[in-house]
Image (tube, rainbow, N blue to C red; front, side, top):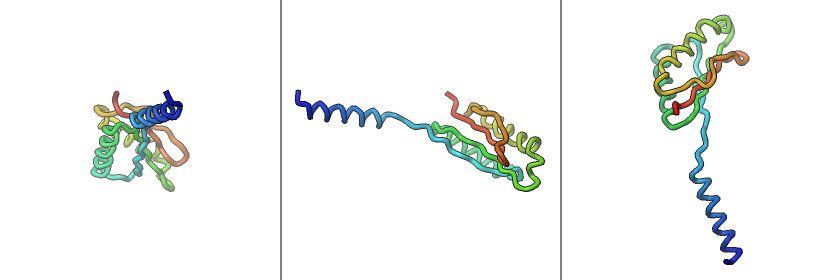
Length: 111
């Protein structure tokens, strides 16, 4: 066999392997503590769409000014509400935790 032909076949094999390989993206959904019920439902619908495509989702609740005082009550309550509505489609990868002025939670698709 010719060496050039061998290199060509190896290159084709690696290209085929790359084509079959899937990467998991992390999508981010941002909202605030005062986000209304309808808007949360709409964002939940988008989260389901991302999970159906096989992506992980980062839920970020951003607190501004004095809203940070309510981070442990309103923030965690809203995150748990979203997690409860997604329990059929998602698994919680990371429980809600504070990172600076943001409350962050990660969810992933159910296997």
